[in-house]
Each structure stands twice: as structure tokens, then as C-alpha cells.
Length: 190
Image (cartoon, rainbow, N blue to C red; front, top):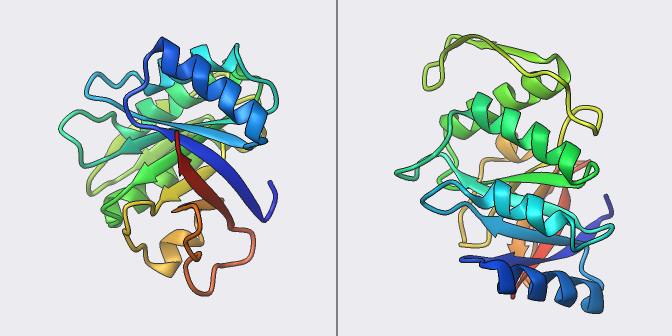
């Protein structure tokens, strides 16, 4: 990844919006497109469809752990693994706030699933005896993980340091003292 990439954000995509976003990303030279996970948990499926209309663009899924409908992090990691294969290694996972211990625990579970193919945790939020993820993601270590700060949320520096990028609104300043290895993605609304 580069120091700063630009992305488009689609809140309620449909097929026409997806095709339009793919074309807009190509024309404007955006490096990423992000889809918000809806009440049906369909962002991964929609993003997989989007992968056939784009080349070289990262495809991000914004997932919240506190929404009424959300996936257990180990299931999310398995679905993102499949998406990583379908997209040719272009998958990206962005967690939405609030940023608390649940997000930290979810990141650890996803990373274990992607690196080792198995995750174990005593919880407290997501206890799991041994979730298995096979095959491993196409990208070694799995998809990059981001924190979505586009709504003005703030994340503790220790949590930011566990991620690969932070999403901020276009033109907004990145968080102060960004840890080494954490990039910024400026988001433009589609």
C-alpha cells in the first residue's frame, strides 16, 4: 500500500451503483472502493461482484460489530478469505466504530484465522474453541484491516497500531501520531 490512497464509499449499493462506482474509480484513479455491510450482511457478495468490473482497485467491506446484524469475527474472516480469492487478492476489511475491546478481539481472531488457519480465544466477547479457516487467503497474512474513522470516531493509538490503514474523509487530517506501517485512505462519497 502507499502512504495515502483514495477510495469511494457506497452506502446502499445496487448493481447500477456498483457499475458506476467501478467506472468512476477507473476514471478518477481511485485505489479503493468500499461497500457498507447492509442489514442482510451482503457487502461481501456485492463486493465480489464488483471485482469482475474492476482491475487493480482494492475492494473494501465496512463491517460493524455493534450492528443489529453482524457476523462473528471468525465467520467474517472466513468470508473475507473467500472474497480475497475471488477478488484476486484485492480484499480489504474495515471495521466501523465504536472502537472498543470487541474490535480489538475481532482483529486478533481475523489475523489468527488468516495467518494460522485456526483461531482460539477465551473471549470475553467472542469465545471460540478452534475455528478453522482453509484454504488460507490468497494474500499472505490475509486482507489488510482498516479502522473507519469517516464518521469522526476516534480509536485508541494501540488499536490503530494493530491495523494496516485508517479511513478518513477526503480532505480531513489523519489522526495525530499515526504509527509506522499504518496508511491513510481518504474517502470520497460516490
